[in-house]
Length: 256
Image (cartoon, rainbow, N blue to C red):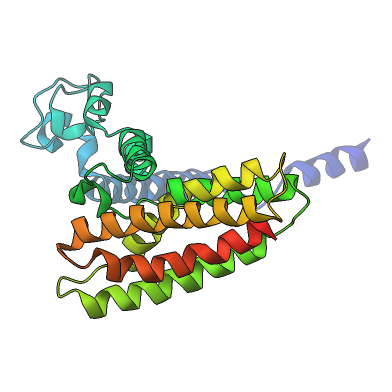
């Protein structure tokens, strides 16, 4: 028993001092308080807005309240309203397609004796010429003649030649688009001849006479328009001769 009591006494005895434990605990608390205050001060320096009221950091031009949007128009983009489309031009007019002018030019071509309006004919409108070229090719195709390449090739080369000739004859000058527009509109009588060629044969005398009449019709209409647009009084026959040669090529395609 004495040995057991002596062993228990040795087990509970140690060199651990309670005062040292309390001192180390107090030191750790003081260390945490000191560095905690340091971190709090650093945070306040980095984020000063946390202690200041939010009204101090709003722009001077801001007229609304906090958490409510301002009614100032500078903060919101202005979107165009639907009323702005009322002043827009029609799409066909922006593309250069005017059916009124097309109809007036067509009537001028169909009536060679009608005076031409130079202001309208001076426009580079290619809607009607392209339509008439396609119609001529379609009627020739219905007659068994696929001549689209010849039509476009002769049109481009012929317009270039007459454009050069008119610039040499007139001091005012004319654009290539205007020449192509006038010659294309005056191709309408040739479309009528090619339409008749679907039902009748023009290999004889009737075809020759009809072709000459159509060539005269086309050349007089074209020369009348060029004279009116370029103010070339007294030179209609000089302008009509190269136009007759130009339309004679299409007459050869139609008859033969």
